[in-house]
Length: 614
Image (tube, rainbow, N blue to C red; front, side):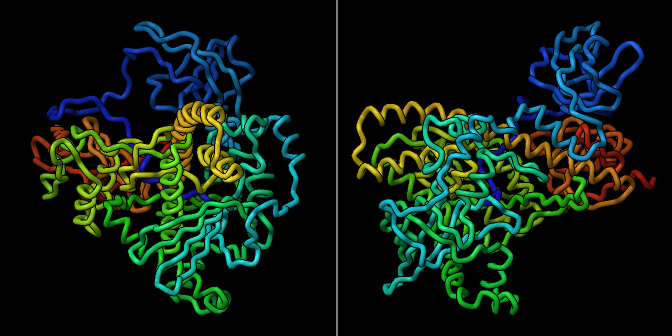
């Protein structure tokens, strides 16, 4: 399955400030002497060489200064090459950071070097060990029934993005005579091939997740598995771990059955064509898929029912757009825009959520060793902090006896629907929520408003899914009679793998975000001097952030905002000119001009447009 939206595991690190900070500022302080040692592991940067020494300009903003490189530590690096540095001496009042080059990545402007530098910086394993690949070569490609349910003659579909290659879920829907539905979700049975204790499994644990970097994927499993033997390709017999759910007219799962199966996907569909079918907006597409139109209409109908129930439970539908970055064959960005989703995306989202919940509830009640996807209630202190900002806009998230419920957030989200401030408030709510993570104990999922939740539907690209597939398969194979010694082993693994997977996921998010920031900055390098309209997305004590309609965000320093002193009010998220009284607040529209873009440092700078004309 291609990459899907992830809403509830990202939030920015909270800054430790007083609840109200009022200060006069003329210019921000860019660099300062570090009060703590720089300890961020491998540092990527651009090497600049002089006659007797060199220095590296760090890509990361966490490094407060250039890094001095003695000549003996060049390691063959040439001027204007991207390199990886290791710190050898910390900075003092009289000495800069000092380091040694441990790896030369390549010339700055060479195609693909920017992404390769990220991979090296984060020390991501992008080649599979020979021992793991030997295991791949010995995997049995033959598909036999072996006590599995034969569904090869059933109408079953995959629905993914046009360019997806790792197809790990397939679905079908039937409407019963009494008006209820049967939803079948079939997931690639990766655990059939990747066994506990194998070299492949060890490597999957080390990676934890697939990483999507625009022009490349660093897969959790070799492509021979993810895109080949396990991918639910059209017209090919495939092993699955499946769940069939009976769903009543109100969207409640009344019963479910988990089993091993063999399927043969009827049609490999994409979101665009499915949307055209259910919206009846393209006669050619309707004609092409005429035998299956009714099936997709049933899917859309059931998805609406499931969505309605989910919303009634308090599900938080945060409308925060993702970016779609188009690259040419050399990896250069040619366009940046919002990634548009439609009702076809909703179908798969609802079906996967429902399957994940049903699996989690079943195995929680069995008291089985398991990995859950948890998302705890936000800190009341942070909710009250958000309410101080919302108050001026006429909104409030209700808190009752130091407890807040998903519905309290949902009420505000409903109020701001389709209003100019929707995106900004949704983002601030996201930052208020805690980070979702993997745990061996079920704690529910606040954002989804669910008592039970796990990740079951993507074992090709997420290790927690693969682990619980292995557990589920054993339960099925042993008729749910599991010896205590095996449970004990699994419980220890669940604790360990949950922690590792959460850390790997955070790492992947940072890499993917950095990859997008690099390409957005590179795209804007050719837009210097151009004017755009955006909204203020962040207000800080050293300037403001403005996000454009195409999702690109840039920064305006105070000297590029106006000829004034500025008073920063953190509580109200505003900046006020002391002399002019001009006010800048989160959510306000602003016209800006691009004055700088630097892809190496992932920096885009704007100036207020009327300042440029004055």
